[in-house]
Image (cartoon, rainbow, N blue to C red; front, top):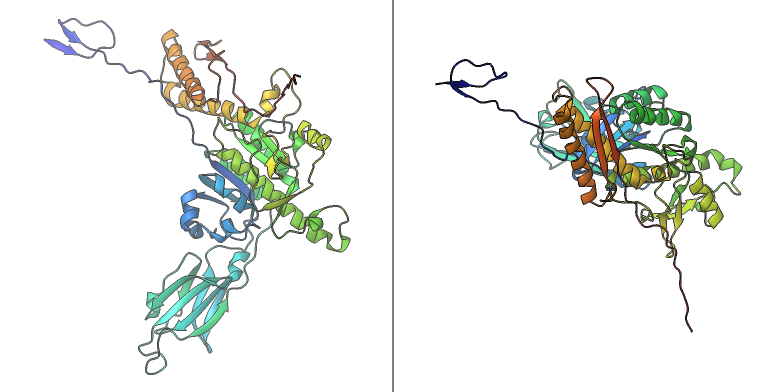
Length: 478
């Protein structure tokens, strides 16, 4: 008996002909949240560095030029970002034109080895190398072991116990070059690496970093660069969302005029434990220290930017950051708006504002973005970041499903369009199941577009926001 597969029903011989055909299953492809980008000036590292939370927790970040001390230092914006995310991309705005610290370790007039910081930048200037004898033998070198120690700010970060120079290997902080004829070490007091310099922040570096980020998966950018290039980041986010179908957000200082759901703007500085709030304030400022004050103020403004980017990237689509507590070490705000009219003015202007709750704790007043001019297309819900996270998730997931399972693979007929409709409904069902979308008023229509290869879809849904305002009517009897 004949048999096999068939494409058309045109067989001649008697037999069993079977056509096997698969269809895409309705499956969830929700993207991972908790991925943040920070664009900043740094004293070490490459142009763009990817670090996982585990890299930071285990100290593996050091190999990429970002020692764990940078994440635990309360005077570094990274400290306010990393606790809330699973992955960080660090874009170094002042990369390029910088030099690495180096020095030669000498024994009297004889060079023993040279040491160079693994990454260019001023961080290397805090590195010292010392060689300490393990024991005393006969003669200057005979039978003597040595500890070669690498320290950062006088804290030993690497120690190698060696007998011969050939045993010495590079570590996460420095690379070593041993003198060619060196057969033994001798004790040498601490020697500092010198000459490390940072490059200059530039729009060229920013453009290169943003170009690389376009093809990567992430949720939120914290822009901690100079004010001059803020508009470049706004334009970049708009282009991603409007032209490339990549729904991301950026957090930028004092940029409420963006008036756009893809941009979140802060305007306050975090005063931390050892800050003099009066020094940061613009009121009664000492003009002789104005440059110093401005530098300190800008840095602390970036603390707030980084924190908001971290909690935004790390928040699930069914979570609002309204009334979320600021980091514990933040003791004040500059400016610290307490009057109702001031706070209301900030919110109406599209500024994410920090205030104090009834227990005097510093909190996010309202989880909003800069959108504050509403029209028929962008209504008030679009100004709420929880709503945007929900809509962005649906859009990103729908794009991913379309690219993976439908483009060029499925016929544009009623059956094919129904398959895509089932996928869209599954995405919405997943959002309903986690409380991001209301189960009522859902409608999905998928139809033939104007051309044979186009499909048109309509989705109606109602995102769920968090409770924020209570109007309580109390009737007193008696």
